[in-house]
Length: 416
Image 1 (cartoon, rainbow, N blue to C red):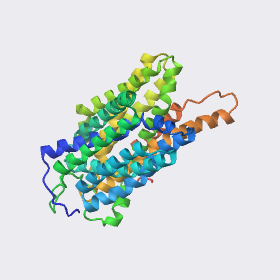
Image 2 (cartoon, rainbow, N blue to C red):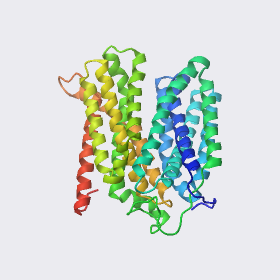
Image 3 (cartoon, rainbow, N blue to C red):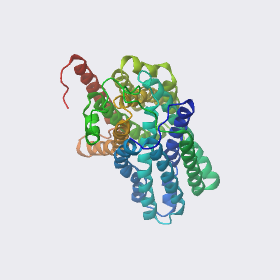
Image 4 (cartoon, rainbow, N blue to C red):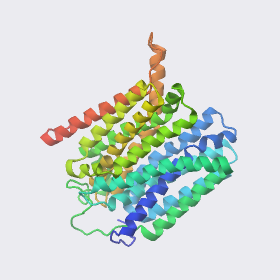
């Protein structure tokens, strides 16, 4: 545990946690429409643009795991402040890069900082969530993350158009520095008695497990495995949606400006679901049913997008995707948090964020590659919509989660 003085949870620290979550995701969200045009201006080819976009995820993944270990060893507060400061320096570095190679190197460094930061802030959130209210609490935190995804790209796009990408980078760096200040003033490691941990579930990985084995023990828990599988499938679908929804809309004759509205419908619906009493069902009925339902709704929304005859139907399908997202997020994060104690929660969210990164990074390339392969090697097949493998993946994950949960309840050992 950290040597930093631990303090009780206060309303100010809960509010500060929400602010920190919002700012840590504003970072990634605001850069989404900014990185590609900036690196093109530096002279990047299509390959260079792809490397610049992907470098963040490539280093984010190992940083999630390393960050989770650091968080449990030296404390949430220190790692959160460090993550905000490192991310701010990296984002300022974007404006100083004069070559494509230099920009990609800075992007990789930013991925390391972001992987540590987001894992730390999730652990902070988990420490402020009582068992029995995990779903409702993470629903509210998730709504703030959704707000960052709505506000960030729109704000960055407006600033870039008015003042250029360098000013966008400076603005984001200032927001990250604000996050560091908020964390330093209001976020502290929580006080924990030697007895029962009120933030942990009944079967949490905690004091009885050595630090070296904690991450393996967490990954071996069936509830955690189900949450991680769901996270990879759900985020793969998000990545595929981000990559292929614009061309789906354009094929229906929608203007480029309408694409933003599709993503807004998805984000707003997800936020409303996470703020609703439905997120509290996780605490009463467990996470698995809500996770499976959310995955099935996402699969249904993807099928509806394939069949959509007009923009209105596509918008409704995007809102249905957001409904699935809004059910899954509090269920998955609540399950991950309850599987750990304050001693091991950094590692637990390290695993969660690693699954998050894997799904988001691999979903679109694999779906696109599969679509191209089917067309190339199948006679008479003109095209395979990338939404089809995404829908199949989500339904398969939902079926596996449902069967695994039933085996657990019946006492039958679950297969790996």
